[in-house]
Image 1 (tube, rainbow, N blue to C red):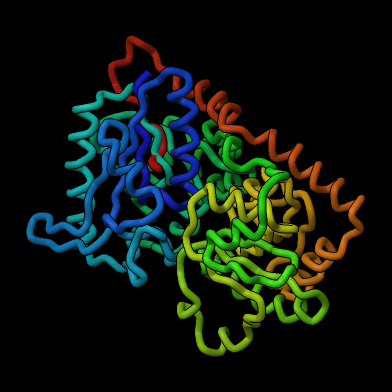
Image 2 (image 1 turned 90 degrees about the horizontal axis):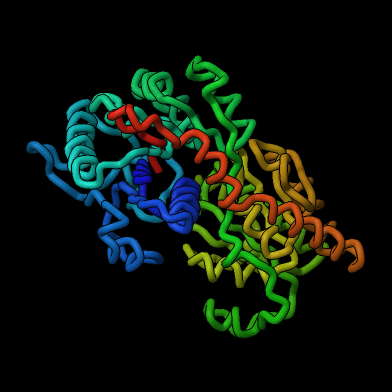
Length: 414
């Protein structure tokens, strides 16, 4: 089977992780796969992988001037920072009508080329958004993947609502990454519940796994911090944004450092200057290290030297970052949002409550070792259930097409 997976943006985000995981498993089963997505061409983690394999990755390059209209970068669905885009990158909402038409025309032309060349049996589109709408205009069938960021985009950008409603209603199926996201889809797009399939999410179990032999000193030397005190480590993996609750974590850090000295390692794109001065004044920066966007291998190493990981999101569709930490046999402290409560092992706290977040982190930092090892084992056991093999097993039930049907099935864009 030939499967084309499209995405509104490149790698480095949750939808990109899903696309990569699904593609790897499909390849393992002997299927031909291709990914289609825009990119800004910035250097960084993964550049050689994606730009060095034109057979697998069809990249639509920005900036571009299309039909006389300059498009300096690909637009984002919501305002959260993207590791492959400019700090001040525009969203779809920011585009003028002329720029939006130019973007859609450009992407449609590129889609037509890749479909003509690759001749997919299945097209999966990550996000209920613009690319699936274009595929529908080209008279192909498709399946959408709802990631929650697209549902946030629906509420954020009224102009895109008509397009996305059509994308959802014309899809053969919609894959929702959690029960929470399924409920969002049903409430926003008025689609048949039987066509919305909860798939869950997975993580790369070959990378995110326990490493009892990991050397903390060697890892922190590689990260550029060779002389740290021997304080326990808490990891945070996610965008530096309000959505991910980084401000709440840094406010909670005041209470944490008063009770127990610990390092907070921040891995992700974005900067704190996106927050107002008054918001930044509430943040406590003692023992906080910003490590920027890191490779999956580096994230796994950091989880393995940590005591726990934290994901204090205000909004979250699933929360792969928490699952990856659990795959390294670490408990997590997460907020009671989206899909997180369905699998998280450690502590679940209310969102936007810095004191409760601090208490949850301190509880695990100071936990009796026997109890701590017990929840570590439970976290690992639960994480192992979320494999890409299981996720693709579900997909295959909906990928299969009637051989007499000459139309393509398009599966949700990356």
